Length: 100
Image (cartoon, helix red, strand yellow):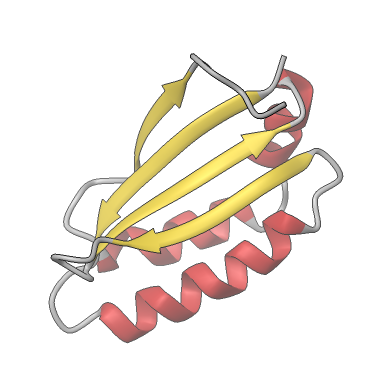
């Protein structure tokens, strides 16, 4: 079964450009992972410092491989002081409907 989640965080004032560059670079790496099916980064229309990242992995094993990727910990360490939350807030999702 696919592993789907929404990661949310808010860039601190003044850190917007640095956060945007970090997440762009990270997204390129995650999208190359064999088990990644989607890594779509959005900012909130009403508050562009707010980020929503929609992630889909082939299955639990692919998600675990993502967590173990060597670039994940350095990304999170660089991001942590630049966001308002202690870390990205993760919400795991279950499908109600799917595309045909």
